[in-house]
Length: 343
Image (cartoon, rainbow, N blue to C red; front, top):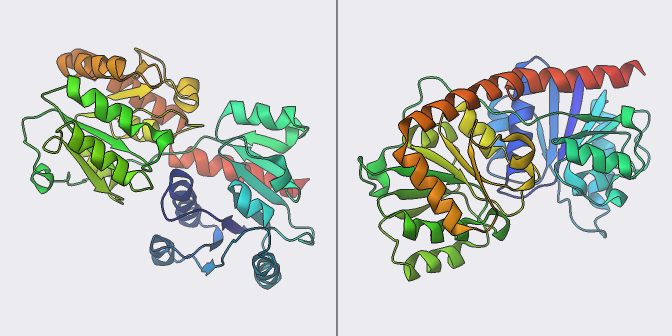
């Protein structure tokens, strides 16, 4: 199957990572994948996988160049399916895209005006599917497909010494864009009440200076490290003792699935995504949003209870195997594409 993927994301972010992961997974499954996206150093992974990458500006409303070039690309490669990621990519699909079905993947409750040229939809949570149906999309044109996480074999953990982290200290790992929605400020505040632990935050974004200032103000420089954007997720997880996912706003959040896949105990906030999937006390510990005291209590509980850790890890890994593997996600997308083409 020939699939044109269209992503208009930024340099860093979860949706961008999910797009790259899915493109590579579909390519590995034997599909013919092409990606149109913005320039990004991370595109090298796609090129290395043998995926043609076309870079376009994906600018604002006055950007007429991107739709024109997308139209040319469609006529050149003649895809069976066009798959867009997020609202901006969908909005740039040209009006005249022939008889090629456009499938738009939603990771949030985006404005529907961006999807006027979309024919079908995939959503990463049941709640987003419900949102589309409430906004007039026919139920048989929407399919909920989970994000997936991969387990990597024979991973060498990141050396703690690389970030001046003691080998005997409980190590917490948080991943995501350095943005207010991710609530890393709440987690950093919680670290005051978890005095024996260290924290790595892997990610980049606009809140870096604010978080650095908070770390300095709370005198946590020796225990809290901002690692920047990383492409070695599995190696980070294997170095850590606990994954913490403190988001304020998170429609899904693949981090909790990655923790399950990598068999690392999970502490999460009750943001939308985690609340729809994580079972408090069974496969993770869940705390209220913006509650640094509750977050610190949950982290201390996890550190002090090895049997709790083992139970949550075992149950979380079973959830991953049952619902969030790469093979399941690829099959679900291909089944939906075939269903669309058969119509």
